[in-house]
Image (cartoon, rainbow, N blue to C red; front, side, top):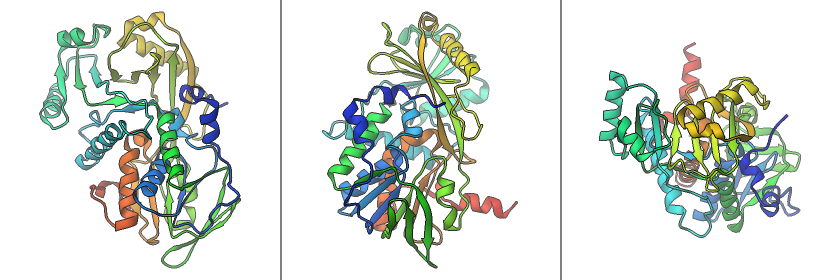
Length: 398
C-alpha cells in the first residue's frame, strides 16, 4: 500500500488537476525535444529549455507529474552539507543549484515556499580528530560554514538536546515545498508552450546506427530531434534499447510529519535523519534508507525509530504526535551520484537520472546543464564526475 505524502495532501484540487493533464488531442509527435520523465528533474529541464530557447518540446510521464520521488521528498536544500568526500565539482553543482533557487524565488512564476532557515549538521559526541579537521576545512571553505560548540549551539537553538555536543551550521541552506516547486516548473513550462502529457507508457526506443529515431508509446510514435531521458528509479528500463546498462535501483525512504506545533525549530537539522519545520509549523522527520526493491510499505519499526531519534535531538517533540507517514523510492546509483551526460553512441540522446537524495537540490542546475548540452554541445559546469562512462569502465574491469 502506498501512502500520500504531506506535500500531495496539501495541494489544492486545481493544482492536482494541473499535474494530471492527460494526453492532449493536438499532441506533437515530431517535437524538437522529447523529455521522458515528469518528476522535478524533467520539469526543470522542460522549464529551462522552453524559457531560454524556442524549441517545440513535449514531456511524457507515465503517471501524474511529480508523483514519484519528488512528492515523497523532505524538501531540504542542504547544499552546504554535501560531504567533503564527494568531488568538489559535485559539491559546487549543489551550491550553484541552491543559488538558482534563491535567485528565482523572487520571480512571479516561482512559488517554491522557499525559506532560508540555515541547516545544522549535528554530532552527539565531541568530534573526533578527523572530524575536527573536517570541521576546520568546512569553516575555512567558501561555503559559509560555522562551527558551534555545545554552549553556542544551545544559545542559538535552545530546543536542542544537551546530548548534542557540537554542530556545523550552514546559514545559506534552507528548504522548500517540493510539490509547489514542481508545480511552478510545470506551469512555467506550459506557459512557454511545452506539452505536458501524462498517462503515457514507453514501449520501446528505436535507433539507427548513430541516433535515436523513434519512441514507441501508447500515445503513438514520436520522432524527436532530441531525446532527454530523466525517469526515476526505473530509468534503467527506459534505456534498455539504447545499448547501455544504467545501474539505477530503488532506495526506499520513509518520512513522518506532525500537525502544526506551537514552537519553532529555528533551522533545519541533519544527523542520523532530518528534522525540518514547514511554513505551516509542522515538523517533518525521517529520511531512512532501505534497499528492498519496489516496495512502498511503511515500516512500523522505522516509524518508531524516526520518532525516537527526533525526540533524542529535540526533546520537546516527545509531547507531539506524528500523525502522517509515507514512503518513496529514490533513484540510486552505486556511487549515489547522478548520471548527467550525452549518450556515448546516439548523439541526440541525453541522460539526467539517478539523483538519489539530491534530486530536489540539483533540479535547477540539472536543467541548466542539459539545456546547455542540447543547444551548445557543452556546459559551463564541471560534470566530469557524472558521466555514464564511470560505470561502464567499472564493468569492463570486473
